[in-house]
Image 1 (spheres, helix red, strand yellow):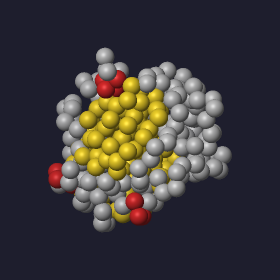
Image 2 (cartoon, one colour; image 1 turned 60 degrees about the vertical axis):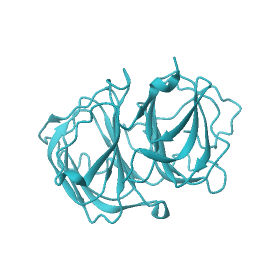
Image 3 (cartoon, one colour; image 1 turned 90 degrees about the horizontal axis):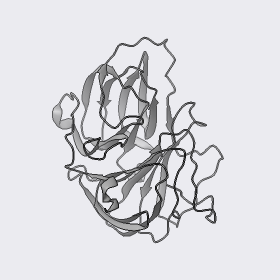
Image 4 (cartoon, one colour; image 1 turned 180 degrees about the horizontal axis):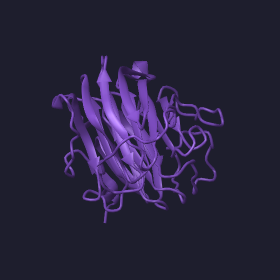
Length: 291
């Protein structure tokens, strides 16, 4: 069986759309749940295009992460919008590209998008369940408990920036348990040019991983506007559509090649573990980009 079974593309599954006011402010890109890939981590990718509100607080019986990424690679740190998001009794006001960590059971929601000038990318992952959950909840935690549960900018705890071919990558956000206590590993970058090098084949023993390749035209969110070659267990899979990939622990994957790129694309990865570790590429340069 082809390893394409680990991929989710636009049009698969049955997305459960949030209660957005107005409805056309948000457009779904890719949905991944147990009906698409059995035993995966639930993932969803979408774009916000205009001011809107999503009223209500809810919780998830799983740790959860959210990415919000500005859609303009020339302003790589800016969200080009203001987003208010409540976690329990703390309102996070977000204006930069960021990753948010929400621990299992924490009430969150009442999202409001304001001052949006360019569509921004939104992604969520339920790290320990393969299906969507949104259980109505009330805020009970003391104010201040979750006021800092997000990270901005690409700052690895060791202070390094991974090496990559000149012009290929713009680094956006890096998160792990060292940067934010209790948080899982995640990193988000732009691919800006073609490329014929990439991470050596490797696997992860300590966590399951998700990987995304997302086109950045919210009018046609399913289109990657690029070609990416991605390897799973030595099988080359050519990607021309926006997609999410589930990599169970122990499954060998990479390298990543980009033989065609018409416009920059978003690439990200993360897992249900606090720190990044991998095996199988002992002769690599430890400071190469490592998704």
